[in-house]
Length: 365
Image (cartoon, rainbow, N blue to C red):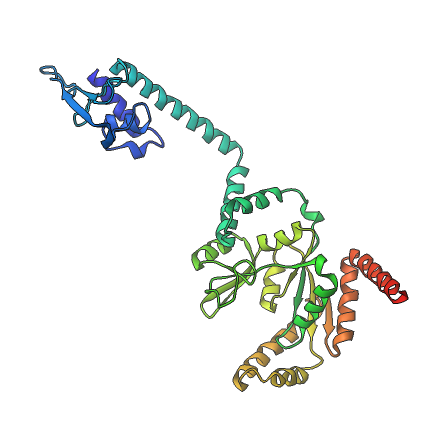
């Protein structure tokens, strides 16, 4: 029986997934595997030691008699063997433990086989874990329901193509996008960018930015989960594929307000967005607008103008964007942008007709 106990302890220690039982006594192993009740201070147990056989390698046997009940007996000497509940023999307990270990090994082998033949399980769980670490939702269960319920419902080729609106600082693209959302708000949605910088006062996670750590974001970038990213003043900023897909799966056109560097990167992906560049009538007029704001120093304005010249050169070059809107007069520029987008997304025309008919009806009244 001593050899049986020894081999069984060796089996437990070497069994896959049982490393946490190593260096513990057989008694504690049995307790861990829930074959015997755990000892507690409240039990008021009184240990009664029995002598071990002479010349034997068998550990000393011990019986424990509870002052509250005599329904269980156990041994507790060092690494001692245990007597089971209500007359349960030592051999039967060891047999139970052996069968339990074998069952666990067989179950683990079956699980491993299933995972190996279904690699999408790892992919789905890894995708979910990455999404959780990036988004950091307050309600993980609610996030999981949305995350998995949206999977596979809309084929990729049925998703509405995203819309990139690019242009130099001060060109008025923010105003144009506000006008677009006022008229077609239910049909467009912004992707929420990620950043590794700390939130500023008033900023809300998941609304203004998805705030995350540099380590998590760097790993996600290495895994190819970001469409575009840049490092600004030691902090990372970027647009994740999941942020875009979230808007698309809601049946909306995802609008991306990114710079020329981001456009270059997103062109290398399979997201296939429509690309619109908003240009000023001239660099001189753009400079006048920037100086007219009176919100920045002369040095800061020069920095912006230097970047703007490079962006305008790239943005107006043939083949880089599908359409260039020159924002000379705001209403005309918006009318051009709107007509361009109706060409990209014909369902917007139906909305426009319905709104015009509604306006005519209101005027009649």
